[in-house]
Length: 161
Image (cartoon, rainbow, N blue to C red; front, side, top):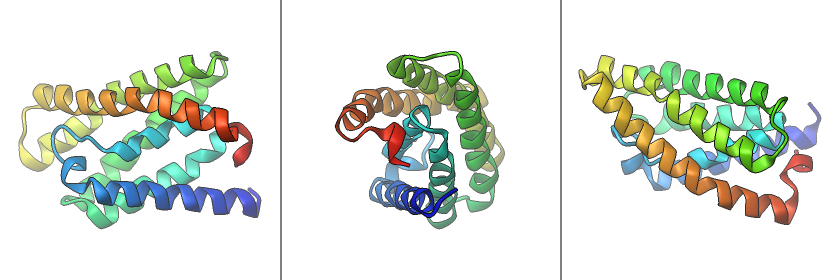
């Protein structure tokens, strides 16, 4: 990875952290409206964004999570798994909006990992927690599709990293 990619991924991680800090009260509940999750859509433009997204998730969970130990394992793990699935599926899906739709579905479905985390940490009911965390993730990711697509049209996110 060249220095330009490293710097841009650092900026991405910083943006993820800053936005997560602003919405912190809503980002770590059983609904989890973490607006910074829309940055997950960057992976459909270029797989080099993987590092900035994961670093942002890791540092956000490290600094802001009320259950750091769990979030560093489950939260980061869910992001890694979801991003890798999206990278794999991108080989077969050429349309950007379709890729973002698949990415939204992948992140929404894998919220079962976060539901399991919350069940372990707080004894919350698994199925209800999966539904609520998945709903929050779906809303943020779905709302992020037109936002990220508009940004892409303006600055070409495929070639930015």
